[in-house]
Image (cartoon, rainbow, N blue to C red; front, side, top):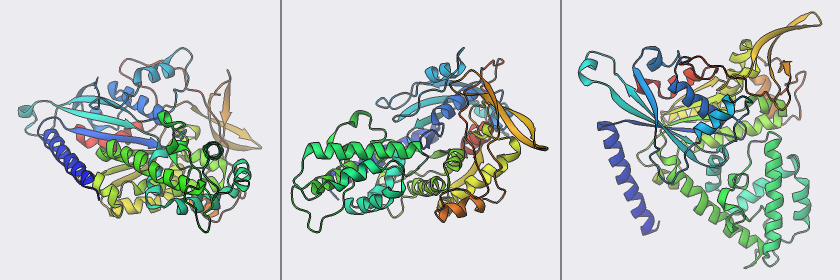
Length: 472
């Protein structure tokens, strides 16, 4: 380890100790990380959560709201001056306008601070008076969190694993064709490297659109201001028997290591290391619709995400997160409003089974974990239709991109999650005797009563699990 690394680690530990003392003695801070893979609904979740914490009429399962210990809530300037602010007002405007639309998705890290005036309960409440509790919400792409798995891999190992999966993944032919015409041991050429990285990134984008979860490196999908930089201009190549100095393979190896050093480590150091509560949003219904391979990839991705919350054997991560621990983790299956409430327990059970391995490891480390089915913004109402003499529990809502209302039945989720996980683990291409549909609903027209936030499903229960005890 370099002397500068040691000094930097000591400095950060001193800073965190000072922050901890300040928060304990004065104004406590809850740092909630919100992540999930693409289209899981992170932006909508944060927007609806904040709106419902400001106007708590629909938050009956949040104890601080139901008992009245939360006297008021208000937005404050965020504490980190170099992190973009989560654009709450613009996102809420998109949802609550005359022509409601889903807000733009997460592209990078952002943050928002919501502060509460809380009157503690108990014998000494009258003497202590109200206190201020801050909720710092940190929004970041789940694709970046998956990169933690790259830290334990060499370039050769990552490339071999990635190339072994490509033939069975969607839209990989273009990259594999280009790779077949490329000599990894040839002298490095920037044009060739750019063509390969562009084709590989296109494959990752197509795989993500098809419901695949393991799409690393994450910055290939969300490059931000790194687009076109050498640190994102590499691709998986088969290792030559004797990689030559100055070859394409050697330069891709160097850039892969630079990606870990210059992109992955700073993210965990600057943003992730201070989080103490975490919600992972999971679009289970989309994976079911995509089929068993997508479900198996989602299961592996969830295990990879959980590895970031248990830095034990990862010494580099342990040094970054010394003194900090995520002690509550919620796996939330989003879009529960696409199902009738009679199937919500089944969706929760499938979600629990998907993350069982990952949850067991987190529970072993002392973190409290839970899983539930939620809808941060309810876009449907429940309905029932009869077909062929059989009644089906359905939902009804506006179709995204069309001015019409449809009644939708997603399929009959099994009561036993093994009927989902077993075919996925066995590598089956499709479901036997089952079909799970998907629908893109538009947000509803909101006509809110004073004091009410947007309609939701179990958002109050999610908030109670994550930070409810700190607001009483």
